[in-house]
Length: 116
Length: 112
Image (cartoon, rainbow over all chains, first blue to last red; front, top):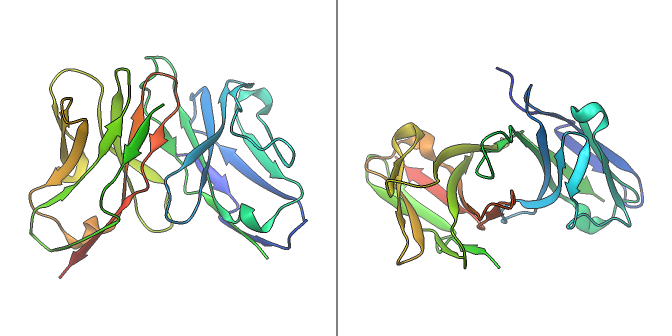
C-alpha cells in the first residue's frame, strides 16, 4: 500500500514569491491534515479536511496561506507571498475517520521550504 | 488546554543498552496518547498508541510505553537499542478533537 505522497520534497524560493505544496493521501482516507514543523519543534496543525470540507482551519494564517482539497482526495497548500519566517517543513497526514477520534494519522515525508 | 512535555531534547545511549524517553502531558479530560518516530528526511511513523485498557502498550521495533494516569506520564522504553533506532521521537496527546498536540521531540542517538 502506498503511503502519503508529497511533492516537492524540497523548495527554495525568494521572499515574496508564491509557493505551493501538493499532497496525495492514502487511498480511502477521508481525513487530511496539513502540519507545520519548525526546526526543533513538533508538528503543529494548520488545517484539517473531512472529505472536501475544511473542518478546522483555526491555525491557518489566512492572510497568506490557503488550501484546497478538490474532490476530497488530493490537496494543495499555498503560501502567497512567502516570508522568511515560513521556512519550515510542511507535513501532510491522512487518516480514516471511521473509528472515532483516535484514528491513527499517517504522515508523508514532508516538504522542506527555505525562503531566502 | 492540553500540553505535552518531553523533558529530554537529546538522549545518547550505547548500542544494546536500555533507553527510556520521557513524556508528560497535561489535560483536564481523558486522553489518547501516541509515540511517533521520525527518521532523517522522513515523515512521522507511528510506534504505538494508548487508547484505553491495559496501561502497558507494545509497539513496533521492540518499543513499549506505559500510561501512568496519576503521574500523567507516557514514557517510551526499549530494553536494548540498535544503531538503527537513532531518530527523533515525538510524543503526542489527543482528547478526541482530532487535534494532536505534539511535544518538542527527543533526539535519540545510539552510539556504537
